[in-house]
Length: 82
Image (cartoon, rainbow, N blue to C red):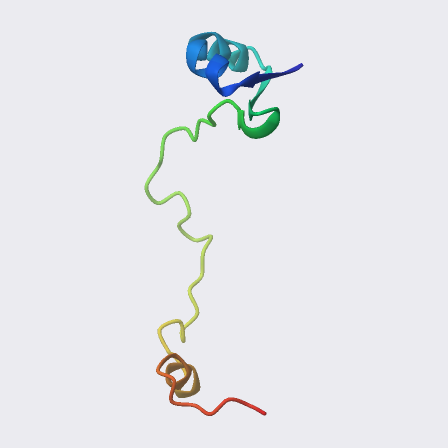
């Protein structure tokens, strides 16, 4: 279920709108009848566990190597291709 409210109503009834979002409703905030924003539930990322990605990510041996051509391009030392 979706409801659209104007900015003034959203400011006045923010607590009520947050309760609606917690119940799973979609709330759209509009300015002059045009949708501007949508209130959605915040995602819970749970607790972080150090080392959870250990063994799942591989960094290439040449990760820190940057080619001379690329460095030159960042320093504007190369001629553009015609």
